[in-house]
Structures are given as structure tokens and as C-alpha cells.
Image (tube, rainbow, N blue to C red; front, side, top):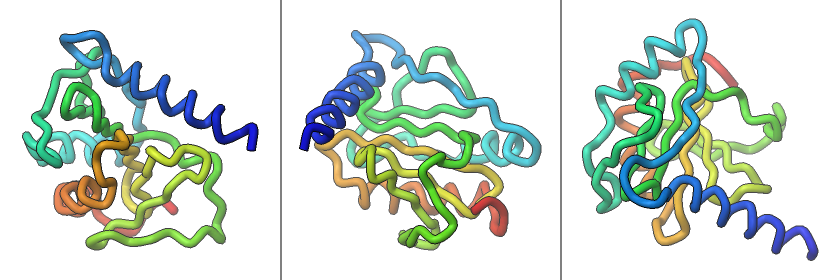
Length: 150
């Protein structure tokens, strides 16, 4: 039970970093490699201006591999490393044709897998993650074809 409050503290810290104090939202951009570079740039061009009722916001530093909505309440990073906690035997649900790994230690973090690049999405608790992931499925499928990483 002692771990649950610690998880909440980590979750709260992540959201504070993402939310920032006004202006651009600070999100550390990943450094994709190989085919992920072109795929992530293509994804950046396809992402919606509005996601789950939140307008797109500016990130700091500006990066084609990062997108944020609602002052960081939803954040996307394309070209991240494979989730360290994911094992080959994990059951990974599919939402509208995109497989999403949900990190059990970080309930607000979802990673699209099985594509040219891993796409990490952080969703604040006031949003329904499934709604966000459904809205991201079309641009992810268009920009990052299968098969690839698992």
C-alpha cells in the first residue's frame, strides 16, 4: 500500500511539469532514430488541433516529436524508447487498430506499439484515456505503418 501514494506523487509531478506555469508547456522531446524520424514527422503533420475538447498548445522546446493539448493536460511524444516494463507476454489492448501498452506503474501513460515508432501519450485524469486514444488512432495509423516494433 505504501507504493500507491508514491505513484500519485509521481503522477502529480508529471502533470505539474506538463502543465507549466503559463506560456509554452515544458516537455522533454525524445530523439527518434532510423525510420521513426520520418514517421514521427509525418505524425506531427496529421495530429488534430483539438483533442478531447482541448486546443493544441506550444511546447518548450519546440519539437516535431512533441505535441500538447490543453496546457499539457494531454501530451504526446513520438519516437520514445520501448517501454522498459513491457514484456513479450503482456496482453496489449487494441483501440481502433492501434495497440496500446498501459504501464501498470504509471496509470496516465500509454504507449502505441507495433509501429515504426513508439508513441507515448500522457493523459491527465480529467480526461477519458480511451477517448484520447481513439482520436489519435487515425493519424498514428496513417503516419506510422505496421509491422514494426513490439
